Amino acid sequence: MHPELHYTNEVKQALDRGKPVVALESTVIAHGLPYPFNVETALAMEQAIRDEGAIPATIAILNGQITIGLSQAQIEWLGQQPSEKIRKCSRRDLPIVIGRKENGATTVAGTMIIAHMAGIRVFATGGIGGVHRGHPFDVSADLIELGRTPIAVVCSGAKYILDLPLTLEVLETQGVPVIGYQTDGLPAFFTRDSGLPVDARVNTPEEAAQIIKAGEKIGASHGILFTVPVPEKDALPQDIAEKAIQQAAKEADKQGIHGKETTPFLLARITELTENRSRNANTALLKNNARVAAQIAISLQRV
Ligand code: PSU
Ligand code: MN
Image (cartoon, rainbow, N blue to C red; front, side, top):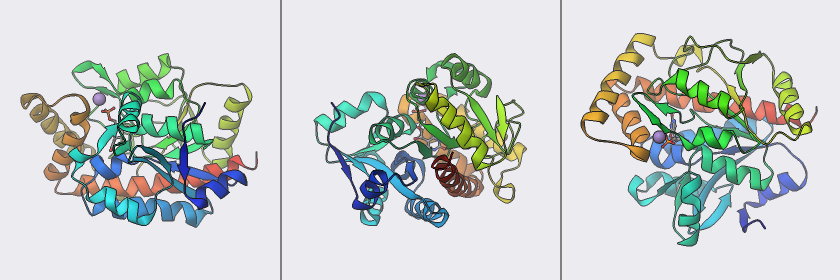
């Protein structure tokens, strides 16, 4: 039986009427970006989805309640909390925060689980977790979740802080198609192309929707990953991105940062090292992915 899900009226109505809904994660708000950029970006992503004609549903756990669709005040509140007060919720964390009636921000994995429970088919985010460089056993639960929860995830690939070839290997093992949206190469988050190939390319939301629909028709139990390059004007030059990433990863190792702390640490440090250029790329790609996800969700109602 499904646990109790709490919706805003807007999201509930949209789902009941079969309107296109796009799920959004909340770890990027609580742990991924600093205040006020986190709140600004979260609201801009919601706006981008509305502008296309779809309904955004930002997902979090509030006082132990699974909450699908946050109010502006709730997004503002989440964005202002010290990140250590909000549990970063991947699959393993959900029973803990729900059982203890705590507050949690959902990762890609956590958001996929809840979005799927709610019947949402498309989810937009920035980057997925992956296999960490030099730590081949630190495999993000995002990859495993993609292998077992059927939802379309629109992202800009995974960061260069990760081992991208190994990340693709795990996705293959998990049975997850990696689709390039208007690209033949896997995007690497801050930069447009990692040099690694995707499994297939689509050029339009309709083509993306056809693949999602086909997955649903054959009863696929796994997710589909759509990767959208960061907009050209906001992309970070490859050499600058690579240098900052190497440096940040070295510092993380030196300081013994590991587990769920790794991604937030690296993100913050890379922002410092690139004098905020990485943050600009990050917020630009998040908004763009929200827009593309909305277009795909709308096409999905028509195929
Ligand atoms: N990538 C980003 N920003 C983020 C994350 C990833 O650019 O905030 C978050 C996502 O919520 C993702 C999570 O699901 O980090 C992955 O963390 P881990 O490596 O601990 O699984
Ligand atoms: Mn990890």
